[in-house]
Image 1 (cartoon, rainbow, N blue to C red):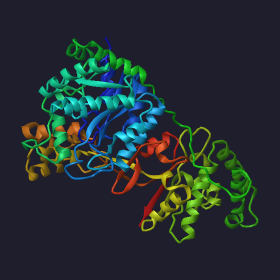
Image 2: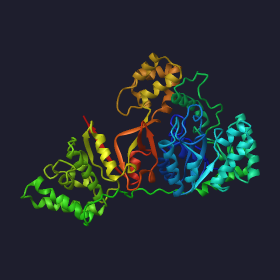
Image 3: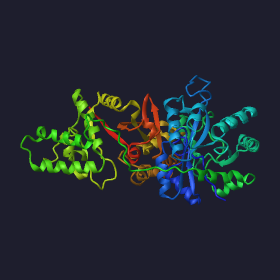
Image 4: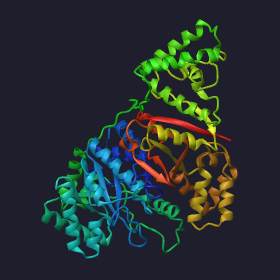
Length: 554
């Protein structure tokens, strides 16, 4: 019998999931499974990376999320009353479901955030199409009500979910984690399944890859909650069962209810999201009059020739320009050039300092003529093809510097021109570097600051330094590792943490501009009143969205 993991937390369940996406896909493939889901806590940070890795290995990706559901409305934010949201698993069946999941996850941050990104039943009713719903873990509402012996309340909750999703898209989630509460919940869920005629589904709420990774996951939880491993009040998983189990293990655990295993495959078969990469989606640049965008662009370019090259410009200028225009037009980037020149010329018009342009974009004479760059590509023999050519798959990218004090004015202008909801800043993720990982682990293990400092400083302060590399080149570190058991423990755990996502923040320069509202393409994240995308710059580019680099110079 086949089995599919439908409840999985990767490293993007920040400091709660200890599974790297690459390792997950490899493990699933080794176990002979044909599909797997991603269901990180409240976000879709890893969705595209996960999708691509799965596709590359011939594994079917299921895009999902474990959302937090507010006890009342997502707009209610009262201490003690609204601080304990329930969990719920949502899986996208198709691209409609994916876009609805994007809307829900975005609203969790932009509307419902209160300690955690929260949605509510009202918005779930509005955006449930194309989604499958699982009742989640012991923190799910149904499970919580069962634990609190509120059986009638649990029944009412189930009825409400059936009303939203129907019996075909709502499943009761049973798990085998050896917890006493889970055993009681499973028994009641089996009864509810019969009473309401809805399916059971077996999951394992995977937070780490292998059973032996339990200790590392406990350390990761301590890093996230700023506790030590010896703190009696720390967050902990009471059993070591939350790993990526084999189909055989799951079948054995649920041999009395085989339909719970069968339904994992049934649900996987129902989920078919497909992403399109490399298709450019540019916002429309509105031009005055009834001329075409190409004609408007050409007029702009020719209008700048005399100011750049004088009245007696050479044929080389027009030949180069006509060649560039033909390539830019053929590749569909006319509007891209128009958009960039517009906000750069706006900045100059209001006295904001703008850099001359950096990188391969300086090789374009069209960019030079319309004011995007300030470097003559003919004078310096710069090659246009380094910036843009028909063989290039990724979008071109102008690197432009703005005065750091007034950068926000440029972003505000773009937001006014294209619409506030069509512009967002871009997320970036901080990862645990070698030294930082050692310090984090040492603190969790209650090792003195002085000792942690000695160990960390034995790791050379060089670019791209890793712990393994440090062990090879730092004799002091290697000697300590081989002679001090505590140091060995710190280093071994730090190796597992190294490179893992630690936190999310806002990219210093990246801004995305979209044709429709940003939330129609990608999920949104909000932190410190700044709205950004949940996908990184690279992912946005792969999805064909226009990102601009509003870099700052001091």
